[in-house]
Picture 1 (tube, rainbow, N blue to C red):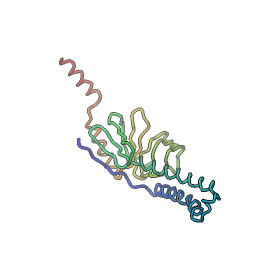
Picture 2: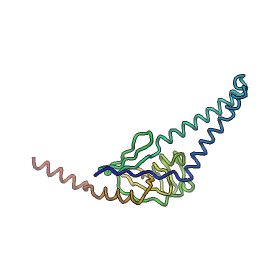
Picture 3: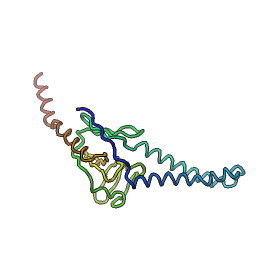
Picture 4: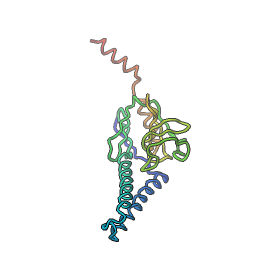
Length: 199
């Protein structure tokens, strides 16, 4: 089977607002330091503590933005025996077909993070990444960018994985078709046993 790549959905309005809001906050926090520098007060020692604190907070926000951008998904690929989640700068996440026990669209999660969110790693900065604890559903792992285009992948012995391809129904149909082509685990075992008997 050839690799089929599915683009991720664009950031939803909530994620765009959170991302731009944090970026703007970091910029605003740099204004006092810039003012003190341009007025010459920073060089005389007046307000150094305040300038250092605001610059440190702005730097922490910038690092948070960069790290979240690095792990943002860039495409979802259906390959011969796995789903591969490519990310901007971070290592791709492989998900073997043998670990997937089901796939479906997840429109019910469209209200996340406004309702039902109990715990999360990143609920909006460049999307939704990391482990989440949702009130009615329990633990899930998000690697998504848009709440209106969610797809849930049920995994064997792991929490469900939530992704957001640009065309969720097309992705679900293609992945279901790929999963249907896989031989049953019992069939593989029988083939191996037949090979062993022939020796």
